[in-house]
Image 1 (cartoon, one colour):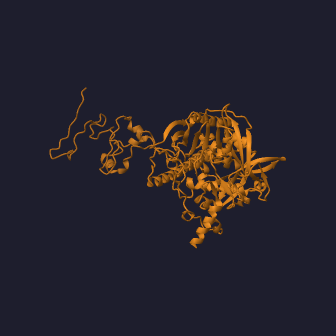
Image 2 (spheres, rainbow, N blue to C red):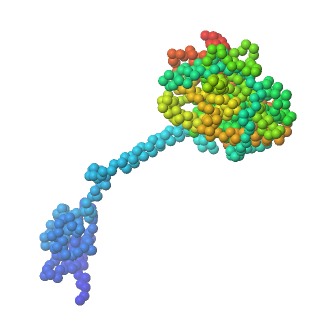
Length: 600
């Protein structure tokens, strides 16, 4: 049995099949020689129709049975065979005989209405929505921080500094506290990582050699102050505050002449050394080796005289120095808030606690702030003793016994920077407010605690002072005052006393090996380390100190009912005209009144 190829139609008149039909390729064996091809699926189409499959050679050839099946069967999409029920010409003309190849029913939506209401547990879906919402809020907050950071970077770059591509995120806000001169010789470089491993114990309590000054009593009514019963922060124009360095202290000179110790310092300088690993901003300490004695000094108008704000915060502060929220402006504001607060919370009825000698820095008849200087001596080893001048600010009676108190104030300048509004959180979430301050001002709080421990204070009072308006840096209110025991508070903030003295002992031992001369210990503005430089004997004696902007050139607060009070702010005036030895608010206020009179 051979295979009959059949007749191949030939069109002598052109392309395509001839007009008369030719013999089919395969004729049916059962139709008696019919010219109609059977059992071959063929889909007639026109040029305007979409092409599917021309033929399906894999399907079952039993078309009679398939034709009787329902339209929803497996082979229904190919049910267009040309059998006796459909003529070729009629099928070609009938467009309804063409069906799409993909005839599968559309998939049912997975999250349709039927599924949504039939499922009982809704908690996982709601939890996912809450997680997504928190993620979106976190993204918005991160974008806001990045936007603020790059705005500050651009403003710094326009002023000639490094832009967003700088080597350090906080580099614009950090510069060295002292200009390193080319003739200085660097002797040593100490990373902070070595400080954390140090430990040294000193006898406790130390020996009190002398107490000078006079103290007023603490006013207990301020313990009941709250955000709903706030008090306006007063300005003390006539009381003078002194920031005298170690070698200029007449009492220390006398003690050094009597050979009472070999190392001399103040509580502010020692606290800066003890809390050095927590510091971020640059600072410097002048070290003088005279014979077998060592004097730790600060420069005139040093960085140690100011209280940094948001030093350890992740939010960068504005770089422009004239901005009221810049690091320098906030430090000046915080310093004078602290001074005014320490005098306002006292009972000013003339009753004072006097000591061995009067204030060694005050002239006769001069009104000075309430302060007592305790000159205390610690033993470092058999040949080395250290004497430090320590300050306490007030006195109080606790269970019938006299107690010393230190007074310090934290200040809020804009809740948007800290993320915590004191007026809303101080009463209900005091711990959260303190935790935020410990995060943003870790070094400042640690130094206050170290000074209270050095002075032997029984209590340390922390005041919470806020601006009347975020854009008004002249007027403030006291929101709350809380008291802590220094030793307990040191444990709470993870301040190790033995580590503090270990740092001091290592610095003293290092400096005792130096030759006689003058040196400076500088905290690196970027890296967590300190450097020791050997400097000429006349260094820092005639250096130029940039003065703050006059008050009439500073950004003025918004007009309020008490605008005149803001114009006579003693703190801002004292910042503009500080004394060489002591910041005297009285002299500054007098000069300001003269300026106003001349302007009028």
